[in-house]
Image (cartoon, rainbow over all chains, first blue to last red; front, top):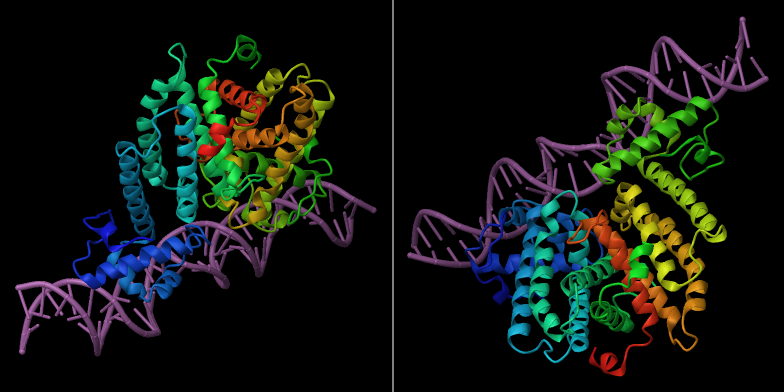
Amino acid sequence: MIDDAALEGFESPGMRPAAQARSRELVLRLFNEGLELLREVDFDGLSIETLCARSDATVGAFYSRFENKEAFVGALQRLVVAKTRSGVIADYEGGVAPADNLAHLMGWIAKSALVWYRRYEGLIRASLRRANGEREMWTPMRELGELQISYALPRIQRFAPPAAEGIEQRAHFAFQMLFGTLNNMVMINPGPYSLGDPATARMLAAAMTQFILAGPAPEALGSSV
Amino acid sequence: MIDDAALEGFESPGMRPAAQARSRELVLRLFNEGLELLREVDFDGLSIETLCARSDATVGAFYSRFENKEAFVGALQRLVVAKTRSGVIADYEGGVAPADNLAHLMGWIAKSALVWYRRYEGLIRASLRRANGEREMWTPMRELGELQISYALPRIQRFAPPAAEGIEQRAHFAFQMLFGTLNNMVMINPGPYSLGDPATARMLAAAMTQFILAGPAPEALGSSV
DNA sequence: GTTTTATCAGAATCATAATTCTGATTTTGA
DNA sequence: TCAAAATCAGAATTATGATTCTGATAAAAC
């Protein structure tokens, strides 16, 4: 749920800054209804008319606030990213992120990711689907991932055995598997594990931890591929 | 490259079976050009007019063969899936798939997957993008994954230590990570590793192997998530 | 040869939503 | 209280491609 506070000082290209209180309320309703609607349809399916009807607004009002549909979804995305970004920073700098060992850290990362994906599933799906037509559509989301990695990597290196070689590469790849697996669930829900399955976070955390710690692949493996 | 032989006896809903040789040639040109075009654009961006121009055909000819664009891409997908399916079966039953140990098997699976994804990247992307509007758009691809798993699982179980618990779940999840990571590369190319990177197959194989063999997550891990 | 079946060329429809417009009203900030 | 800023209602306009049509031609089947 996006609230008044989240809009404070928020700007986005193609979105006219709201000068009056009722405009801010309108934008808030549009954002929250948009988030809901995107659970059921994707970018193309998101009808401005439906969105406005559900938000007790008129089409004209929408267009007096946003340049077009793209700008609307873009703004919604930036808003969510901004909110998430400050949450991530707070978690790492405020001692919420585990600092004792790798398994705990990865468990927390996987669990947090799942919560986030469930909350914004619709928006994430719309962004993924759009990521081609407008290449930069996924960029803000990508930066969120990079932020997470930039905080996690130093800890991972601290937790790993000093001799561990190539650990940075493996950590990067582990995150790529994490986000890949989750994006894929949002995209096509392949089964058998889904965003809602309690085993998913555990599996992801275990796979990442083991891969990161395992050290370089043995020669026999490397040469066979 | 799709050839004459691949079309032999091929049928697909919304596609009129070609009775004459020149019709078969037309369909072949459309399929191959479609495959090429889809490397650059996705489903929505695939213009029938452009496709026909590139295939030396007229729009009318296209519509005398396919009910609509959806049917065309659907048919192309089914054709590729059918071809791949028989390849997978041949590999497993003809002794191409490694039968000596898990690391080799997974290395081969990852490498083959990468080759396949690179070859059909455009079609895969279009199918992923469409997977929402028409839920069943991804179904044939999904079945390909299930086929692969149904062949690999018995071998995995044979290779694993007899005491290994929950190995079937871990194997399923490992494949879900594999396809998720690859689909994500096709979808948004997140970096740092891409379909073209030689390290990708090695990393994927190592991650899957280690995860499958590692046994159930230690309690400390399980309880932390 | 003759009759279907397919394709050609290319213009004419259609469908669907996004987007724009217009002339009131209403709300807000000074 | 007033002028400016927003919104309302809802019709009119646009844009974009897919899809359909039509009257020749060409190729294949028998």
